[in-house]
Image 1 (cartoon, rainbow, N blue to C red):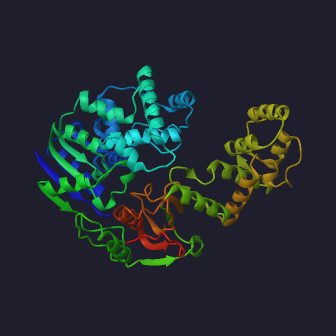
Image 2: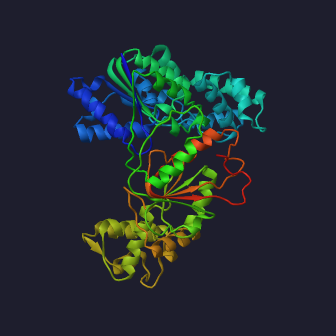
Image 3: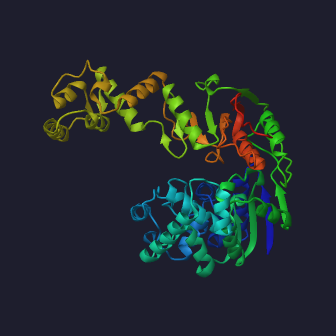
Length: 507
């Protein structure tokens, strides 16, 4: 067996390289079914499948082993979705225990998430699951959590009740899924196994990878230890570093097609201070780009160009979302979708067109009609009229006929079912002229963790530090987070920091 390691600094074409490995294997006569492409990340595996399908003309049905580790375990164990804990199960558990949960288990086996922090019950289960994926005693994990509001006796009671609950229902969670695969899962026979984003694997997932390796001829690790930013999920980059150093072949992808030289210089000046990292010499784009420091986000020219606004925590991202709405920005929020539903803006635009004497098509008209405030009797009569109509386009006159009152002098927010808050925001968006771009949103708001793998012309990196988010006891972790955030920039990096903060990052 040959083990190869591919280290991919930001924007150096790691996925392109991995797809070429798949291509080479196919040219050697390896059937697609005997090529494994695994990752903890749904995003990584989906991108690999999409690109292999598009660039190599591979049928999706033949890429049976292009999966997240959870998805692979799920399939190899022959599980059904009914066997996995779901939201309704956690809701029942919440009632039984009297502790708040937020459906802490991800509902999609491809998501690659073990758990999510939320209510107090979630915190206890997170401690339990974190200890399992790290393969450490639960008491140790509890001590490291360091939350004064948590109590060890209550935690033990919650965890035992959770175990009993699963046993009674004959269900498993996402950590169980990996553990069960390690015990009894059928391991696929592979000519080549590609492990992408390997720096983000927890110890339990490494055990699963090793089980896959046991029936693989060739292994390819791919990742970047400088982008290992999931310590809070139990990740320790040292395992990835160790495996890369002991690999038969180790390749550094040394040319970035994203990062300009000024951003590269800024990021490199921080990441070089991380202890134990693999030194990787890579060159930026020829473009210089720009790096600048600012005190407030509103100092930046957000109305111009394409932007990614990155916050250290969801708490800060939520505050920024309010500010962006107040300023009339239409933006995409990673994990939450558009700041206002496209359908809502389409309805407003449709009604506005009607009041201006223009006609709109039947589909657009029907959406406007459904959103207008009318009583049940008028609604029923209007539905009959609309259904009976054979017209392809409709005017304000027909809408007035359905509504049974004049509308042409009315403002959209006077008759459409929207809240006052929505009205103010939608008005601002319309006045700004912002438009939806499904493929490439002009403004993206995200945490740094959720932006991993993304890019934008301009990146605003918010370092508005608080005691809660600036872990000065773990400076290497914060350096890597900064590095990932900064290297999303294709042109300009704007670093926003609170000048009065007592919790500045100690580089």
